[in-house]
Structures are given as structure tokens and as C-alpha cells.
Length: 210
Image (cartoon, rainbow, N blue to C red; front, side, top):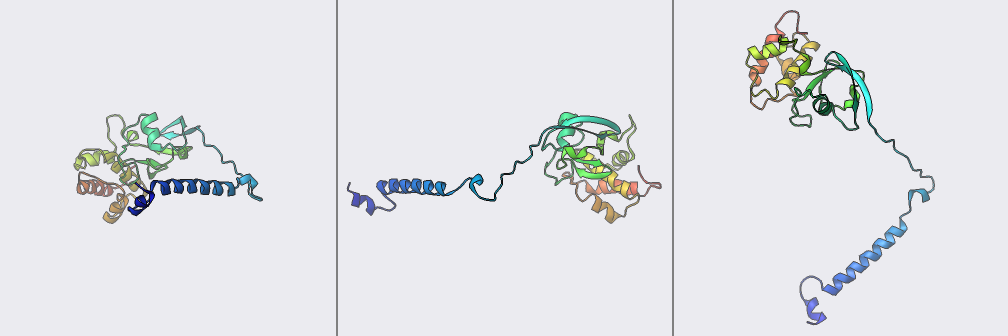
């Protein structure tokens, strides 16, 4: 087959393809030659970024002071579940969209899957394991039980912790405030009405909930 017949077909010939490869290599070499390292550009300094490393932090966890080594990029959820073996705090979405991993940090509800572990240093962290006193349930846990606010139970720890944070901020929230306070938590079983009933019952109690 002659070269002319090759070129008559659609596309490019093998020779043209090889020529293109050669030209590309030459072009790359030229561009690479023109690019100068940072050290060769006047006025441009090389900045050495600090390296993140492991560190030991101390904080209050469920009423007890602890010290633990944390790693860069480690979340509070990872620390609680994988290192401290407190598995009541659930990993569901791991993106801060469902509220299943909610814990209290200085009485504020946070998504522990997004909360850097090192930020817990010097703070007061409360998880679902820190609520009951022996066999006696916390009032929020008891209310959830009495109003059938449990279904599969996987989202329940997050709802209970979010409820506790809400009631510590305001002892008697309105129905609208309750909905807003629990807006970041999702029950995939569809048991939100029972959950709201439990929280409304707590909100009606005199003296509030600790």
C-alpha cells in the first residue's frame, strides 16, 4: 500500500502519527527548558511549610480528665471510636449531614466526624456513654424510651445528644425551636414525630433537664 493511499483514508497515517509524537517531544523539551526553578526567579522565596505531627492532648471526657495521642487529620469521631473504644457515638454519613455522630463539646452540639481531634484539647467532651448513672437512665434517655422514640436505634445517640444540647441552652423551647434544634439530625426509620413528642415532654418539665 502506497503512502498516498494511506493518506486517502480517514484519520492520519502511521508516519504522520510518528511525526506528531516527535514534534510533541520537542515542544515539551522547549517548554521545560523555558521554565525556571523558583530559586532562579529574583524576589521569589521558597517557603518551608511546617510539618504536622502527632501530639498528646488532654481534655475532660465524660467527667474524667484523659491524655491521649492524636494524629494530624484525625477526627474526634475516630478518636472516640477507634482509640478510646466509645462506640455509642455512631459513624453513619461521615460527612456532617446526618447528626448521628453528635457529641457535646463545652455544651455545644458538634458533628464529631468533622471536628478535628486536636481541637478537643482543654475542652469538656460529653458522649452518650456519659449520661446514664449506672442503671439509671438520663432524663433524656428515659423520655425517648417512654415515648417510643427509638426505632433501629442507630441515630438515637445523636438525637439524644442534640436534644440535651438544646435543653441546656433553653430549658423550655417552643415546638419551632425544638424542630430547629434537631434540624441537623436525620432518622431514616421515619420516627421523627415520636422523637419530637419526647422532646416536647422534656421541655414541659419544670426546672429543665440537666
